[in-house]
Amino acid sequence: MKDEHITPIKVLDDSVRTQIAAGQVVERPLSVLKELLENALDAGASEITIRLRKGGLEEIQVTDNGCGIPSEQLLLAVAPHATSKISSLADLSSVASFGFRGEALASIRAAAALELQSRVAVEKVGVQLSADSDTTEPVGMSPGTRVTVRDLFRSHPARKKFLRTATVEYRHCLQYVEQLAITQPAVTFKLFHNDKLILNCPTTTQLKRIEQVWGESHADTALPLLHNSGLYTFAGMICKPETARESSAYQVLTINNRLVKHPKIATQIKQAFGTLLAVKKHPSFVLSLQLPYELVDINVDPRKETVTLAEEKLVLEQLHAATQSLLAAHNLSFGAENSVRYPYSMDMGLAEYFHTQTKLWSVKDLQDEQILQIDNVYLFAQSEKGVLVVDQHAAHESILYAQLTDAWKAEQENPQPQQLAQPIELQLTQSELAVIEEHSTTLTELGIVFEQNQNTLTLTALPAYLQTADIHALIQELITALQSEQQNYTSEIVHRTLAYVACRAAIKAGEALTQTERINLLQKLEETDNTYTCPHGRPVAVLLSSQQLAQLFERE
Ligand code: ADP
Ligand code: MG
Image (cartoon, rainbow, N blue to C red; front, side, top):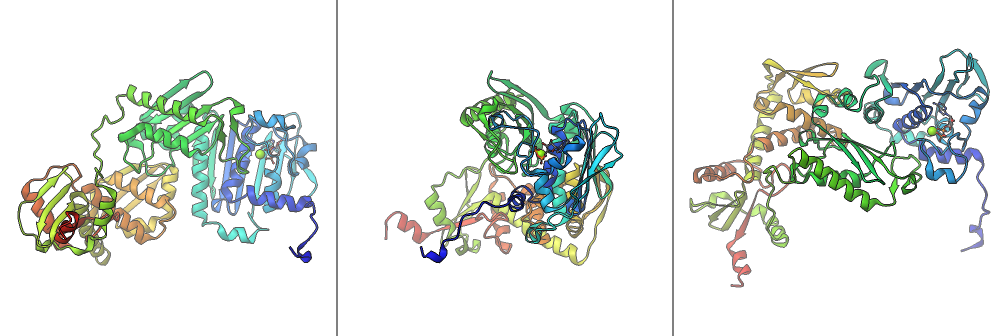
């Protein structure tokens, strides 16, 4: 390396260090909210009120009735690496508090306007530190702490660009508050968004809290789990398969009381369900793992969202066994339901080989009326060009999808929503309603007319093409589609909805078809345009040409 590249190494000053820490801790409104809520819980609060404005981008305020901060320590609370929760390295291996890094308030203060007010019960007045001020002043307030954060990322314009819209940030915050509230049923939580009361969860039991937040359907299907191996305790609720969703929003996990994400644990529980769940579904659960503190490393992530477990394999095995025996005890054992799966028994090389041939065939060439049905899934027909193999579900699905797309286009040109004689009422959670609110134009685009009142979504009119659909399941599917952020384009969501309706209405793999039904299906497939692949992108039919047959048998 050349000399001019050598620059002296310096120790960064405090303000630069804090800015760097802020970049790690404060990523979006949710990360600020999370830190403030952890502080409130660490302070032993039994009542926590959250106020958000514009999804937290404009303002995040958390008020608690916890122990408060003594007036002489208020400035210390916002100093970097200042914490009351640990004092030595040894403490780090036995932290029971949520916070321990002592950098949250300092980091937030570096990235936004932070106002701190606090009062300990023994003092008559509280003390406050305003944003941009280095001195404190007295303030009248009840015991506890109130932290107000405004104008997030005012000093990080680059970060601001990466933030999503207020509705998206709001949804993330709401989902987190819901999950946290579920883990802390003894604490009263209130959440206001733009002054509107969204969540009101008075102190209650675990099961009632699930009902308060996720609604009756989850509470009614929750199976209580308790497993104690001496070293580990797993406790909580695992919901029956009918509440499984395509998103993981209904999976709440705490490890030593800390709300964390641990994909391997979620996967393990899902696997214990076996064939009770469709491939894409995730079971709903609320699970609390208590493990010896020395087996859990919480200091692996600045945002404290993940932990690593020392005896992970053992924990996973026990969890799998505990879940399976819980399900078995409720007659929900592995494979108990005859859920049919695609028997993808075809050797992959051959399947891929077929795949490349998808565009070559035409049913027009069908010669013989004898159509074989193999495994109650595949129809084999002889054509002039070879053997045509059709996946009956995929074929029916793409026919219906094409019909629904036409019906939807017709509806767009000439909307004819049909009033429902009996409006359909759906009980949804606040985060589900938030999704609906965020994407109300998509629903309108689909021709769905609805009203929203508190936890109830009332459908008053539906377009003709949706009249026969299982509307409950459809709305759930829509919410899942809308929740996954990649699909923010209305056209994609419409596509997914129509695909869902088509999939549900289509004959399944595993259904035996009569000779006439087989012929009807193939004829209809021939009349329909663009049916080379099903709406999910899998091939509908493949042609095994006479030439390929000859090659397979080395006749050429
Ligand atoms: P940490 O939580 O890691 O200690 P923070 O920066 O979040 O670091 O908070 C610094 C300190 O401020 C805490 O250790 C605690 O003593 C005090 N504090 C912060 N929020 C509250 C609160 N809501 N109630 C009481 N004390 C608080
Ligand atoms: Mg903290």
